[in-house]
Each structure stands twice: as C-alpha cells, then as structure tokens.
Length: 390
Image (cartoon, rainbow, N blue to C red; front, side, top):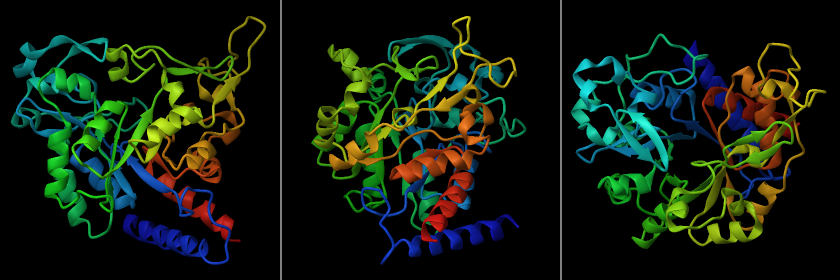
C-alpha cells in the first residue's frame, strides 16, 4: 500500500502543479514554480540519517532532492555524514577495535571528543552502523544500516528512473583543509564524472563557508550554489535570534578576523554580496518566521502546556520577516531549513500539525525547504497547491 499511496500523492501533486500554470496566479516563488521538497539527510525522520537506506526511502517517498553532508575519510573518499565526529551518529563507541582512535579535536573552534572520520578508511567506516540522532525517533534500526558514500548516492539517483536533484553540503571545509583532506576538488570531480558539471545539472552545492563556494567558482564551476545562513538559537523571551560560537559566523570568516555575524548575510548588502558567488540562500527558518514565548511574573518563559518543559510548543509565531522578498529582489532563491514533525518543534499556532507550518512557508514564497519528513512536506505541498487552484 505504501507504493499506492505515494503514486496517488504524486498524481495529486502533478495535477495541482498543472493547475498552477496558464490562467492561475503564479506562485510567489522566484521562478513561479512549485517549491521543492528537499530530503534532509535522506528520510532522517524515519531511519538513521545519511545511510543508504535513508536515501533509498527518501527517493521512494518522492522527494525532489536528497541532501548529503560531505565529509572525507582518511583515504580521501567522500561520505555522507553530518559531522566529522562519528560519535554523534554512528555506533562507533560500540566497536572495541576502534577504542584507541578516540581523541579530542578542535572542529571550527569547538573542542570535541570522539572518533573522527578522517582517522578511518572507507573500509573501516563501512563496518559502522548509523544511529538515530533524536530520541523521539525510531531506535530499532540503530547499527543496522551503513554509511553512504557520495558516489553511492549518485548511483541511486541515476538508477531511480526520475529526475532527482543532489544537494551536497561541503561540511566543515576549513577543518577538512586543515586535516589535509580538502573536499571541493573531489566533489567537483565526482559530479563531473556523473555528467553533472554545468548549470543545467540536477545539483545544488551548499556550504556555510563562503570561501568553499567561492573556491569552486574559481575552479570554473557553474553549478548552482547556495549560501547557508545559521544562528545559535532563539531567545524565547523576545523572539530574536542569538549568536554564539561556532554558530555565530562562518568559520572561514572567524579565521580571517571578519567579525560580522551570519545576520549580516540577510541584509540587502549581504544578499547582494552573496549574489556575486551563489544562486540562492539556505537560511535557518527562524530568519523567516521566528517564535516567542510568554514571560511569566518570575521573568521566565512560561510553560504554557504544563508539560514541565520549555520548548516551541510554548511559543507562538511572530510575523514573517521580509527575507524571502528581499532575497527574490536580489535574484536569489530561498531554501530554509529544517522542518520536522515532532510536536516539541512546532509553535502553538500550528496546533500540533506539521503541515500547517509547511503551508505557511509555501505561502510566503520559499522556493524549496529542507525536511526530515519529506512525505509530510510533499503531502502539505499537494494540499497547498490544491487549495490555491480552487
């Protein structure tokens, strides 16, 4: 029945998309087309992230693009992992044969203890299993699925029988350069070998570090590139974004003594600067719609739902900023991150329905969005487009 449901959903989406052409009002996206659903780390809401199985599941769900974070092994093979530190998303701690590899490293100014991909060959990494990074998500697959290489993901896309965009992120590129394992040339070579080396290729390359994107441009790459824009958190008392290292500024800026924060990127001047080397932006979604809690008499954020925890369920959304329109005026598309289904991550306005959040962002004109639950994002898009077509 899963396949039937996905087929029906795809058909409904295509019908709605067709209804958006011709006499219908164009969508508020940069190109007037329907927003893309980008599977963040694969189907990471259902299966351990960035494993072969998670990417296969995202393809089965019908995602428009799948996203791997790119890190390097000791022998220079590019693999899909969100962090160079394998302790966060693999069962490496359960492998006594690797106990002696545990060490402390400085990653983008943050001191971390663990096991690092650059100390392992691909053959060794293939003995590890991925684990869920969220305690609320299924744990029964932990350790059972293997880490995917970027080449394996390319091969999966090629075999899928449909156009799926590859959306790799150069992860911690300055750190990798310091380790003698630079990412960019190897990534461009893999893509070129796949026949993906010009603007028409089904590829977006993203990075938090402008220098990584600029380097690839300097090598002659015309692939579509995306500047990611981070922040540390939201001050729930005010709804304002907070900035603390290492999430305050791109690490290559920090190394160069550039004291600007990521927030400088969302100003008109910052967007114009990004346009000189990139095609779009990938901002944390709170740059577009932030959230704010209620402050009690004790000066603390109130636990509105009385569950003993303070999280986004105790907040309400604030009016949207002008970032989507500002980026579009600068000629940049907008792909915010990351959308998730867990109720603790949904502001009270959404009444526990993740589709309500997706629809709000679709209506604001985002050109795509990153989701851990691509199936939910696709269902919300189908409903949004059908509602517009009425």
